[in-house]
Amino acid sequence: MKNLILVLTLLLSLSSFSQEINLVKGKYFVNGKQISSRETRQLLTANLEALSLFKSAKRKESTGGLLIAIGGAAVTVDLVIGLVSDVKYPTAATYVGAGLILASIPVLSGKYKKLKEGIDLYNKDAKKLGVNESDLELNIIANQNGYGIQIQF
Image (cartoon, rainbow, N blue to C red; front, side, top):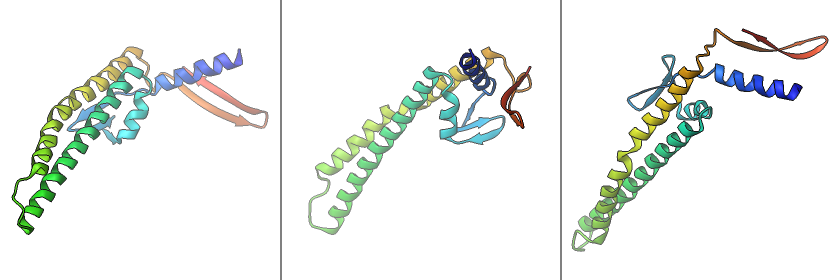
């Protein structure tokens, strides 16, 4: 029974600290304070579907960035080789690089939409709970008799 009460208390405390996340110009804010992407991911662990959308958006961002970097490097290297040596420019590397850069456009296009969906889903659940920090206080206390958990409503 003690374990059940402890688990329920911990779950309730996690939901009580859920706060709305605002996405402004690609930055995450909670109560007007900017938080990192890692902290955002930790907040989104309360809603697995929102976390899945967030991870998918971050995966799209890294894949698109990788395609742009490889494509840009291929075009740049081919340009430098063409300028320095007597090799006919453009070669296949330029076309492959340009293709990779163009392929990154559809990959990156859905990133912001997925981020917004994930954060909106999390915020909807946070509002649905209706529990504010002022409504619930959870403290871990210690005295000469031992340790305990204090809950105030």
